[in-house]
Length: 239
Image (cartoon, rainbow, N blue to C red; front, side, top):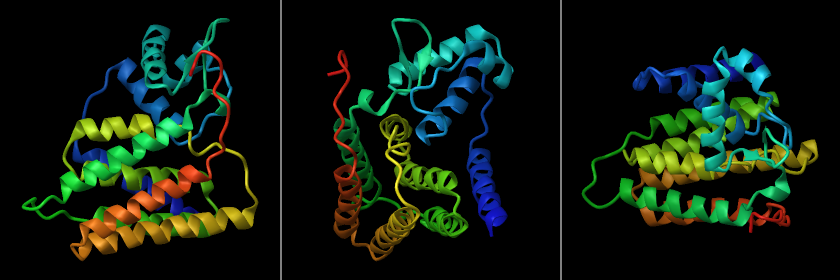
């Protein structure tokens, strides 16, 4: 089951990328790879991204890597300290309330745009497939893969609108939610099962044509996660 869940996730990501093939230059490649890792919490908070090490890992020149890191700093995914270098923000350096509020505005707005009266019908199959993947990853105990699938679900929901700007804005507002305070295994499993259940309830409402109900479920889903996010103090200079 463990291998199956990971294989499904990788296949979905591959299929998604193949829909719109693009050629990336070196800095865009660095930006894309690092952004995905940062958004999904795959880099330790507070860690420094050494330019020599990461330029070698990504096979690019340091100038291209630095350009990508500057862009990620503008997105709020990295910070640049006075002592020099680029770092993954610590929890107290992230404005969680503002990020969650941005999520609510973007996702509900995209939902209303996608399913507005007279809008063409949307294929919800990709969302269902992601829920199936999340179920496999949940049962396999692949927490990080589950986080990636959760992010992919919400990003796909945004992309159904056909508005690329909304999707990009979402990717920048969905940051830093995963590497928060650790929880027990039982609590983690319970939370993951609830996320899957709520995702499927949203899909069911959309299939039934009940957009207001889907919007209400989505709002509750996001707001519930906002409520359990630690209310951490904001570091000086980031208020």
